[in-house]
Length: 77
Image (cartoon, rainbow, N blue to C red; front, side, top):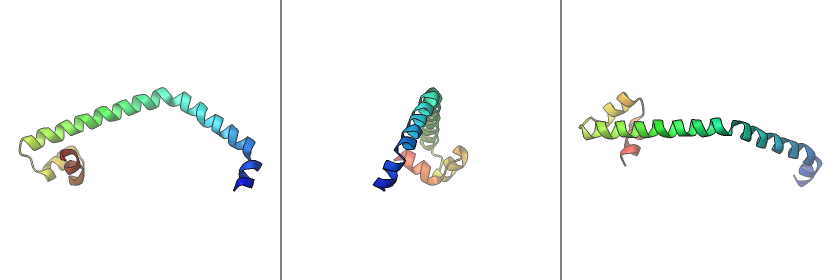
């Protein structure tokens, strides 16, 4: 493995630089997507808690929120 790595070191360095450049290029978009995902997850959790507090069954919460019963239970833990 070491021999292969040394033989292809220049190519590996170029690919690493390319990956770093792509990360920089898409950093803002990735950050925004992460923020949207977190906000959506928070809203989902709030909805699950509201429904649960109203006495709605886990299976009905799952159906209304379009998630699995296991995910409902995980949120409610």
